[in-house]
Amino acid sequence: MPQHLHASHAFARLIASIALLLGAIRCLGSPRVSAVHAKPPELPIAPQVIRAAPPLPAPTEPVIRVHSVEELFKAVEHAKEGTTIFLSPGRYVLPHRLDICTDRVTLRGATGRREEVILDGGPHQLGELLAIHGCSDVVIADLTIENVRWNGIKLDTDSGVHRVTIYNCILHNIWQRAVKGVRVPATVARPEGSRVMYCLFYNDRPKSYADDPADTPENFQGNYIGGIDIMFAAKWTISDNVFYNIQGRTREGRGAIFLWHDSRDCIVERNVIINCDVGIALGNSYKPPDVPVHSANIIVRNNFIAQCPESGIVSDYTRDCLIAHNTIFDPDNRLGRLIRLVHDNQGTIVVNNLLVGSPVRNESTGEIRLIKNLILSPSPDLFVDPKRGDLHLRTRQPAVCDVGNPLPQVIEDFDRQPRDSRPDIGADEWIEEDPFRKSN
Ligand SMILES: [Ca+2]
Ligand SMILES: [Ca+2]
Image (cartoon, rainbow, N blue to C red; front, side):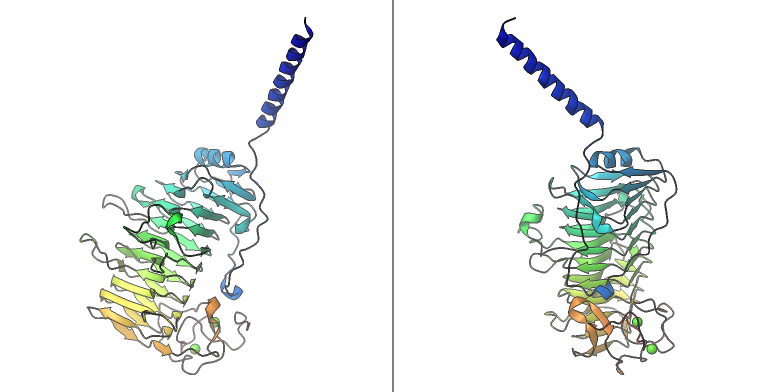
């Protein structure tokens, strides 16, 4: 055989060997996710108001551990009811939306530290990252979801989705809604009993047109953005979350918490909302004719809200809601909307709220009860660290302490400390030696 043929045979053998070797490496498993060296994000938020989530109990079998994007999709697709999927630390760059369609599936970061497991929609410009479809009792916990054009966690509530728990997660740079529940037709049961607890929602900056091609100068002017937006919610609990910088392009975005379209019997408590455009919205001014009221029998209590220029709390087409014992700091609010009431709010009561800035702005057409709401001017003695969301009382304030009306619906304060028989106005009940009150 001529020498040049020998050489080409040898080269072909070499190529074949390399191909075999690569195949063998692939068989060892799909590539693991890249490591993250994650720390909790450094934000100008007082650490005293970021509540540590009590750890979840150990899971029951079956338990699957995943280390790669491929394993994650496979595990979710083939999970039996009741499966817990633990995600190893790392950054999971998702090529498309991940859909959970099985009852009682839990998706959980393996370390319990939410910043160590990141589901990232950025590189593939995902419109939605995680969806829950036609199933109930799903748990999403101890992980981060970030860089999504539209919805971070989409609940396909029009397919019957109930008792979802979103727990100790970070939702970061989500440009329409971090958590979205859609319109539900009359033939489907309204989404009942879900919980969003101990989560951190934050964006690095206001929304820009480049973040979301669907939000244009012709429709929402870059302001189609909010935190949790649920229609037809029933018996939801939204508690102990922190929201920071959920802002539209011109600071006219939607609520950090937004319950509307006949939402009922929900509790919104102990949330901290800082520098968002709207804090808590019960309804808004767009109400279709088939929706009787936006929010009914919803309790909004013991929340800390700082600097939300469009509204701290807005109540717009509600019935029998209770807005009680919230502390709102916004002395420079351009519209005077710390608490704003619009349209008909029959039976809704606004009581024992502490406002630093403008008084309750009542544009409501019907009867509404405003009781023992206290309006104060800003004073350095009042709160521990108001600009960073810590609205604990700094000193005992005679104007605030022991002057509220006792309410059977509010027996604890922001710190879950008991209210005494003479409740203090606002979210913080003053206790002399209070472990939660650490001066900065
Ligand atoms: Ca008291
Ligand atoms: Ca307290």
